[in-house]
Length: 130
Image 1 (tube, rainbow, N blue to C red):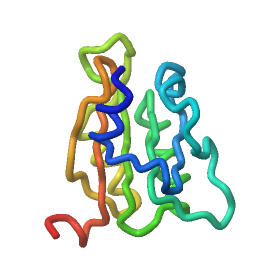
Image 2: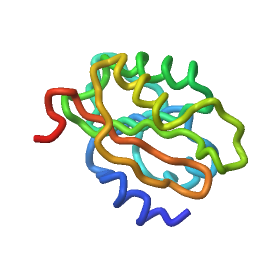
Image 3: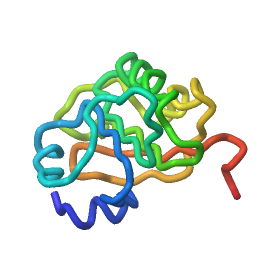
């Protein structure tokens, strides 16, 4: 994984508040030396949220669990295993859309994190296209 390339695609800013949940170890290794929370802190609104779901029910639970911690129109990324990767998952791009809709978000961008993970960025429904 190329740290700089990934963070550029994610629009990650180390000076902003970040919450990263359920990340695989190789991704956590990239974050060494970077300040972020791995569980939500009470009364915190994060500029950047990134969640990793291995199965659909887990992804939906993660999405719902961070809803009260996101800044309105902050960067929100839902990461899921690629269908061609080594991780067996029941998540597809379309089912990520369903999970994000649970909290009023719609997808706007898709990127590849690496050969295993894809990520969809989401925004509040009313902000899409603006």
